[in-house]
Length: 335
Ligand code: AMP
Ligand code: MN
Ligand code: MN
Figure 1 (cartoon, rainbow, N blue to C red):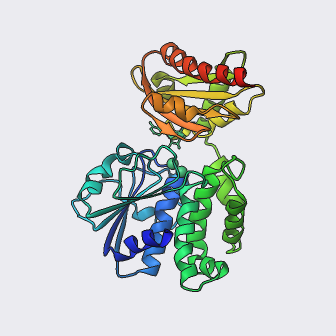
Figure 2 (figure 1 turned 30 degrees about the vertical axis):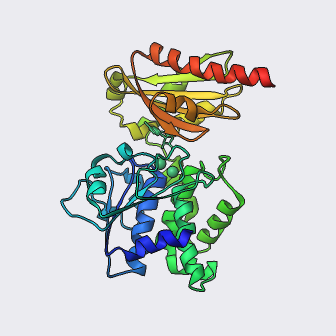
């Protein structure tokens, strides 16, 4: 089955690779791993990556400087949509997606809307990077390569990209989406000699002073509701302006809220336009935050989901907690 998807890629002379808006570590890494692999294995193909301005913390990845941040007029035979669960998540590259002769989506979101001509979606897999690794490895295996030989072909540049994507979407190998296979792949990747402690520190944990201040402020101002089982914090446009912060500066804050004792669901609101909030949600055990996010037009995974909502902080939190409470009460009854 995997090989059918590889054939689509192999058939295409020209390939545009795109990802989702506000690309995260998994998205950027998957695009660059695909770029590196396709250029090395099929040097005659034209392959380009289109992504919204990626964070500079990923500039160590090979191919980073080749990322195109604006749409082009070119028409490609294949558009490869990475880590994007719905068509509107593609942002500026949506027009190029429509113009391409053929489209393939590679993704691990259970909420994938099957918008592409062909979709390789596996929600049980930690990250798009892990799924892409398995896809390329399936071809290598077919050609008689061992996993060691496949990883040697990837080399450090591509290994660093796959590793970064997997590390980011598993919260550095600790979220429940981390499988035995995830760790086995990571083991193969680090055997290439990549500087993985540095990759983890500099792309995942390192914070600028502004980011540390925002984290402190969100924790200080966080409010617990529903007997401490839900915690939320909100950053207004004014606060963002005060710190001269960008939305990517908020990465990781919600995870600190989620690990507070007694918390089942953490919610972080970030005002992107007056009274318009980007909502991030994380859950610890049994609450399906994706269900709540989908209800408000968003998506994601069971334990990590998001959406956009309008109104005051008070309205947004009231609407979210009303739905979350339904789920939590159902559980309390069935327990
Ligand atoms: P975030 O809170 O932005 O880190 O997102 C958590 C997860 O929810 C990610 O897997 C996103 O792909 C997904 N997600 C976030 N916002 C949206 C949205 N507006 N629509 C669909 N999925 C989303
Ligand atoms: Mn992503
Ligand atoms: Mn992902």
